[in-house]
Length: 340
Length: 140
Image (cartoon, each protein chain N blue to C red):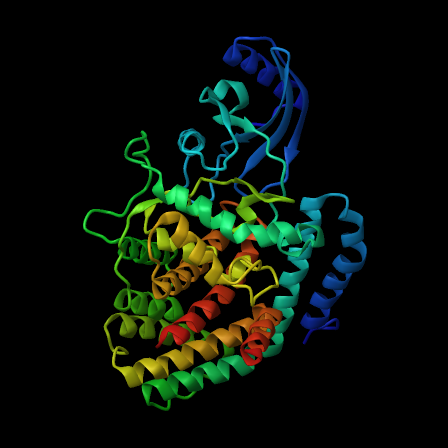
């Protein structure tokens, strides 16, 4: 699906000329480093005399997970988030015509910032940003969780099956993945049973970003510039998200700082309570952090299976199979802390 | 049976080659560089697995015996031992699902087995992670 760069630029400038209704030229097009599931380009363009710096995000034939949003869905969700005043790159154009670039894609404004979690956690020049981030993250999460998803046309978002609570939905999915992989795993089996028997009640069901962690934020010297990577957004318990961004795997060597290696958890939760106007049950957040580890540990096995099945040969995917033990250890430690 | 290098020495030779010759050469290509580092790490895991596997097989087997209160002997054939351990593990999953370990004392015994099994996995897969978490725990 990748033609020559010259072709790519020509097709894109033709598309932009038509989509914008004014002459458009591409002055620069370069691939951006991303994860295994992304195809992203930095595009510098001139549209009707206005210089625009854009990011192009294109569907790949293999997506990371089957329940990830398509580019069209992601674009529409980002549009709703942008309209709601959430810090997100401004979405510009969505193209569903696969004859242009081989797959659907969209263009959004480029946001200057660092999107690599390890750097955000460790770079000395980002110390001020790290101090500001916990409250900024809390503010954005409160807004995301308040977004009236029913008022927008977002009914493609995955929601718990009828009759299932958000917790039960996550547990059912985890069992389904293990079954599909034909994996019998005593540690996960026990963790899922413990999860069933110790589930806190869900008080709210809201839009959640689904992958809200330091590495999916764009961070500049002032802190949070934009929330990126919306492809795992779904409807669920907002506390899932508060637990998720505290998981150890996103702490990058700063294990004692539970909030993504940048801060303690309590000031973050306190700020969230202020912005969202709700009280947060700390024990329920502990629980969701635990369940997040169960889920991520199982996804690691599924990712390794993409390699093992021959579908997607990759040394990186293979390595995730053995990384799963880190999440297993963490989930057991959290059970021990909460009470076996 | 086989001439040297031994299996361990073969893996070691490949890893040292990657570290000293390939890594510097692929540094300009970030993706290839990253994947080469991942490949080196996988070789290290394989080397540690060879080093620890027999010991872990013995301890895992013994823990299952303790948990199930029986004294099954570990098969002497290595492959048979691994296969049988996998079967016992499947059986354990069924028992967990059936509620056999729901009562507190049994649940705690099971938990201990799982925690030790996971530690052993990490000794092979990620000893640095294990060490970091344990240091953090004792520091608290």
